Image (cartoon, rainbow, N blue to C red; front, side):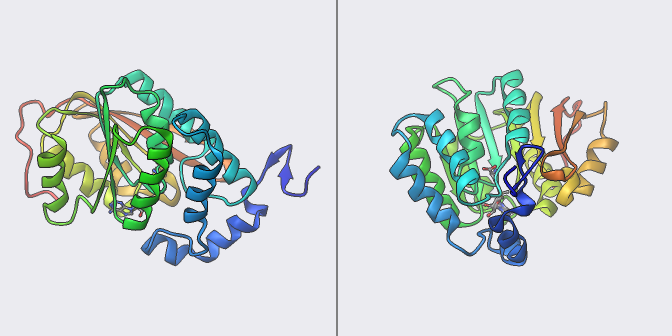
Amino acid sequence: MNPLELVGKRVPFLRWSFLRLLFSFKKLTTEWQVGDGREEALAHYVVTRARAGDVDDVIRTIDEFCARRSFMIHVSEEKGAILDAAVRRTSPKRVLELGTYCGYSALRIVRLLDADCRLVSVEFNPANADIARRIWDHAGVGSRVAVVVGTLGDGDVTLKRLEVEHGFAPGSVDFVFIDHAKDAYLPDLHRVVDRDWLHAGSVVVADNVKFPGAPEYRAYMKSAEGRTWRSIEHATHETLIRDVVLESRYLGNNGVKPSPSRP
Ligand SMILES: C[S@@+](CC[C@H](N)C(=O)[O-])C[C@H]1O[C@@H](n2cnc3c(N)ncnc32)[C@H](O)[C@@H]1O
């Protein structure tokens, strides 16, 4: 058996690129790049090897890069399948993503959407946004996916851009994928709800709710269960780390006006 494998599966813990990522944890959670150029290398790998205009081949090529070259922090195979299933169940017209990185989860989502549907992804790091754009353009989906550089917590700048430049309006967002800074999950969810962008039936999927963990977000969803949200916890086990992807359906605000004063 390959020493990098355990029961026939590649184990990230035993890969140098995974250990390198752990050593860069501080940089990773402040600048959101590992620091060894792997994000830029991924863009180059995709543009030189994947069939242009073929979103499935671009996704396959990214998976190949992760298996052969470097471990990346985007959604894994197991979580990607959970995300795909939630998108299929919702059939969204407009999707908001928080946390683009190199654009992998956005590709997985957009390949399941009808041609007239749009995804807008908010990304804090302009270098990551640029890499994602190049990969999306190569996949031929650049006109259906947009990235906005900023954060929802930047004092109305990004929230306004989403409304003015991307048509976000009350009841217009069908699906949200949250996969950015863990302490921003709950405040950003409140910002989206306070803006009134969701409607009854909108679905919010949040990754890493158990590990590294977004305990306040998870507790909030528990406390709102059956009143404003109904959630399903998807337990995941790959990479030996136990995590939860939380899928929450918005039930509407029952006529209560959202409070603009929430965090
Ligand atoms: C785990 S990665 C996203 C992975 C991506 N969703 C995927 O699966 O392909 C997290 C990303 O969120 C970005 N980020 C961190 N904090 C953010 C914030 N407050 N607002 C927007 N993006 C943020 C980071 O720069 C990083 O690119």
